[in-house]
Image (cartoon, rainbow, N blue to C red; front, side):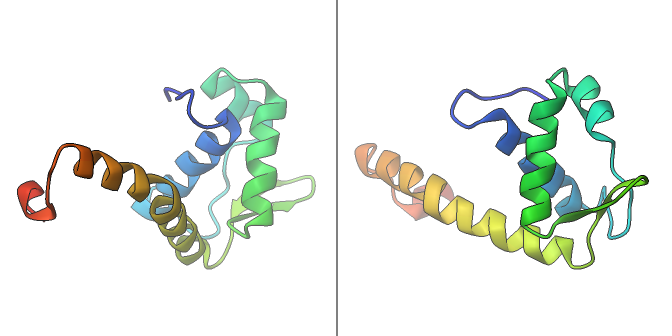
Length: 112
């Protein structure tokens, strides 16, 4: 995974896990990597991986079974979809809109 400087790494990791859920790569009830496994796989500090898991847990996308590991929550796909839609509309659309205005583009120019 390549990280952008525009967003904290732990949020990018959380987004990556949410994307795997949305794509069907991870399904409800699937066990996900441990904090240490994820940190090692991505080359990040385990504390960064833990922050990602804490965010996803607070959002209800994953849950922890003490002593067993982290799992994808029931209803995680719907939760992830809503959170990512809101993030896209709130954070990315305004940037795209501003660029389109500067470049004098209309949605029809993009084939939308």
